Image (cartoon, rainbow, N blue to C red; front, side, top):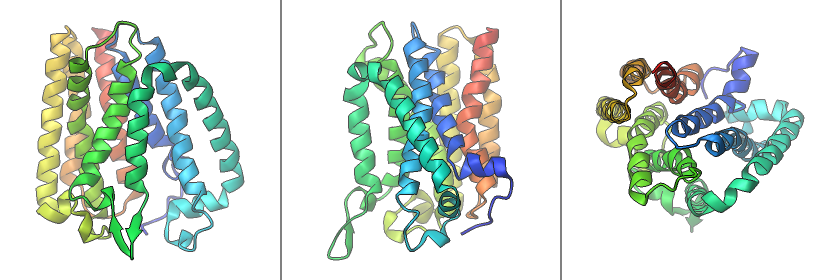
Length: 288
């Protein structure tokens, strides 16, 4: 179950999933910097933060009455704070709905399929006690997370550019973001390796912890190379340098990763890479 977080601020960031919602917003904001006009995409980034907080909140509140709630620290925290969370999740959901309403005509064709795929992955379907569906496909866990996050943080905001983007550009830039998210998802698989079912066939289960770390390391190097080339191609030379500390931070975390449920290491530092990289790059864009 891991060690409980004692700091009240960290509890909100980790158990309340505020930090991971900020990560989704940061990734979406990063995309908005490279559009012809990013006002709608920045509106979406705020909606993504509120929607992410709401989505995690709904799934947690739905489980606070489960028999196994005592086995999970985040569920125990939700149970202790469920009145407050019901109010905050409701308000955040309503605000996200209002912000997203004018955007739906532009993005529903991309966002709805992503939501459906996510639903069919997280929902455990069984026949005669045997698991079926997307959860049983080998290697799918990390890859699906990377694709869904990249679609939500890149493909959706790009559809909000007033100057229509080509399908090739949207697909290309979305794929360029996948290595970063996939590398971080593999680190979380390393954390979960002792408790994940062997049938999930995650990267560390198949290749071992060292092999998984090597794969994540290579993915991060590729992602950094993609971003440097992309930024230099747009003339953001300063950003092509300032973004590198964010990736260096990720590489250090990859080398040090181990299969221990350390909430600060994974939920703050590893998830924080998704905030650190766009902030470092954004600083260079602002300077350049």
